[in-house]
Amino acid sequence: MLSSGEVFVGSGSQIPYFVNLIWVGAVLRLQADRVAPDLRILWNDQRKEQTVTADPYSELGVSRNATEEEIKKQYRKLAAKYHPDKNPGDAKAEARFKSLNSANQVLGDKQKRALYDEFGEQGLRDGFDPNMARAYGRRGPRSGMGGGGGGFPGGINLEDLMGGGGSASIGDLFGDLMGGVGGARRAARRRGEDIGAVVRVDFASAIRGASVSVRVANIAEDVTVRIPPGAGAGDKVRVGGHGSPGVYGAPAGDLVLEIAVSDHPIFERDGLDLSLDLPITVAEAYSGAKVRVPTIDGGVMLTVPAGTQSGQSLRLKGKGVKRQKKTGDLYVTFMIHLPSDDSRGIEQAVKALGEETDMSERDKMAL
Image (cartoon, rainbow, N blue to C red; front, side):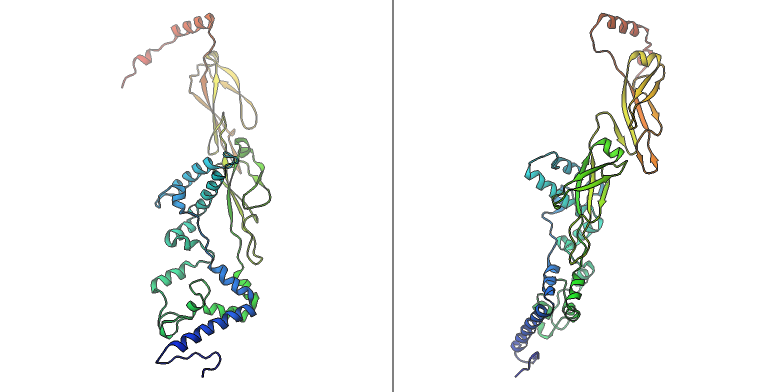
């Protein structure tokens, strides 16, 4: 007759041994519920996987060998296409936008992408230990006498009987039971996940800076975000504490917003430099003149040199985008604007101008 808690290992039948192992597992489970009821929740939470709804490469339509720049370019293209602001009331577009955002959170992060490439979705679950997974892969599944610290004779593993295969081991179980509920909660304490989203601002707001109100699907409240002066497309703003809530009192994650900038009808931007095409008359181009040029700080007067040709440019130093301690320039390209009205006076003037214009250089042009 076996005493309580005794495990029989004999040379004959393994049934008593197996039954007692099941009994040991049941007792340990019962004690876990009585002494540390949160521990059972901890086991379950540790085994939950952070799943990806679809293969992120397929979601973004890129190959597994795609570069960071290719991934970023494709994400921006698709995010702009399916952005809720461009598809108001379209539930499918909103769902697609969220899927693209989830895929970009994986492939846009070097560490997460490496884990996904090596382990698939398993590598993205909470509490995943890549070193342990690699070590397990090298030695193979536990079995028999050589099956690791949790192994028992006869090829039966106590950790497997207790639902092993997750991140909690039999050693962790006894340690947490001895440490009480506080130890279990400390082990499960985990910072909340960051939430990523895209916020679109107009051209002027990105250059001058502005405060915008953002409502993210995962957050019930509006969040006011300060866009810093000189922000550009692809820049990210981190809002602390507005991500997913933490576990067991751990701090919440952050809200990470990627900035998208709307085009401007006049200005174009390249880094900190701005450029525009400025129309001028034939008379202004021929004789020279002072004309008004728009800048981000207001209009300024610019001298058009006499004899200016269409397509020539001037640089206005320091009239570009200001970002921290750096300032870009404004490049103005003169475009000669011909009259569009039909009048005999204009026709005669243009004819006379043509007769006085030397075009011998054009006759010399050849390949």
